[in-house]
Image (cartoon, rainbow, N blue to C red; front, side, top):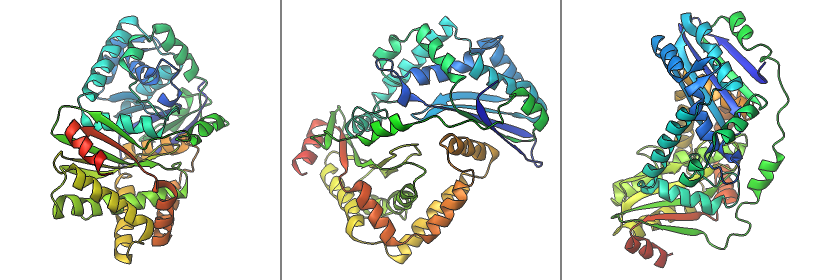
Length: 411
């Protein structure tokens, strides 16, 4: 039996079945000196489970023309499967086995560790990744969101098979949500997952919340510099905000649309169209269960870095004292509502969204209520929320020493 909440939806118009299994707790729960453990286990789940080894799973999935993937982020592990209606009762038991009976082969783990280390090395060549890692260490200092999901090369190399086996045993006890949509045989699926459809109590998360609430309590700096040999300078400017379930998060998403979504956004027009200062500019505001990052990011030439930074700073700070015009507000609202609808078209999108919402302990109709909330927002709501979370932003710079010092000297 899998301790989970099973959500089924039959769609008569499709012969495709999509399954998403969300297992609560991701890299934020990596043990000390084992950073990357959850992602390493997540990637290894497709390499053997139950009576199947890696080759057998690959043969079953590929011969059925199906798709199977497992990944981790800060908040959880997500297993994804897509297959035809005629194969779903044959393939869905694999998800159950991945959770309840993962087969961790030493050689397969070695291969997965090599792939992970390669990915970490590639990140070290990417100025955006370097700037973001430094920003996270500054803003989420000594908390669960501080480190990257992939972990560190040192920790990955020193992770043992026993470490992974111990974590794998925990999965069966963790809170999880399984969402399956499409042309499903409901009775057959319920038989596969046993008592999964019985609601279970949510795991208490007060410790995680308390840790995250302490962020920056002892910070004496709001800037971090990462020097690389490049004529490019990456600027990341922002702060942590709030939970995805909080209405303030919705307000900030409207603000992110105003500042950085599309060619009509403030940042695009100001930095690219009007002044030609940036190769790329926008907002990074991902979905997270706690204290979501809200970051203005920009890539520019080192000779234009100071001017670009000043425009970014001014664009954000104007939202603290100047309300959006009715035209600006309505455009931002339309962008966010369109984005919500756009990402809710396919059964794959709907399944993943439902798994994450339920995994976060939120209501199934959250997006419907979100749209209603957006429609009722005023410019003052946006301004007040910006002041609440973003009035003391943190700055991460990555680029040549010359470009970074120019910005630092002009702060």
